[in-house]
Length: 216
Image (cartoon, rainbow, N blue to C red):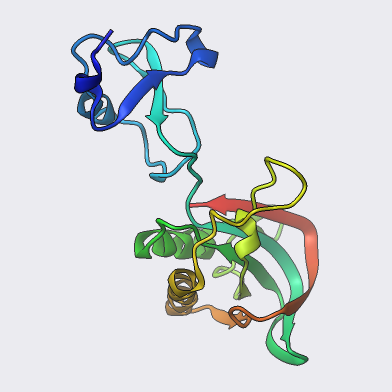
């Protein structure tokens, strides 16, 4: 078994539930850099997903450390209409298009926001002439309503009261939500928004229904 000094600064271990071998840590002579250098795909740095098998060791590895969460989350609903009211004022309204609730976690940054823009603009969630979801909101000339939603990072794993520790603080989340809005507008989309940190009432007609959870 590799020594602890070999594993520093991060400890990689075999997932016991996957291979049933708690002693199989990384493999002799393997360092975290060796394993990290393998092509694991494009997952977010805080993904909960277990890492794939290292072909040189046959071990399924993951990072040992504090609980981690996924990146920017967006709950996307295809709508025939959507609107949002804050403090008895209509602040955003669209017709046909997408209603998008956006949640941001602590280590998200501009790269995640930009990936979400690309994903939303190109997502084939709208019907073509044959009634098949094969067109994007850009293709059909639709609009987007973006509403900040920190509760997408609610943790209900313990007890009955959700905790929000994984949600980024407002001063970090707001600029990234605004970056998403700006990016969608740069793609030529009509974009309406809610009001950050306000109590809001969202009214929508989900067309289909069609709802997707995105993590980028």
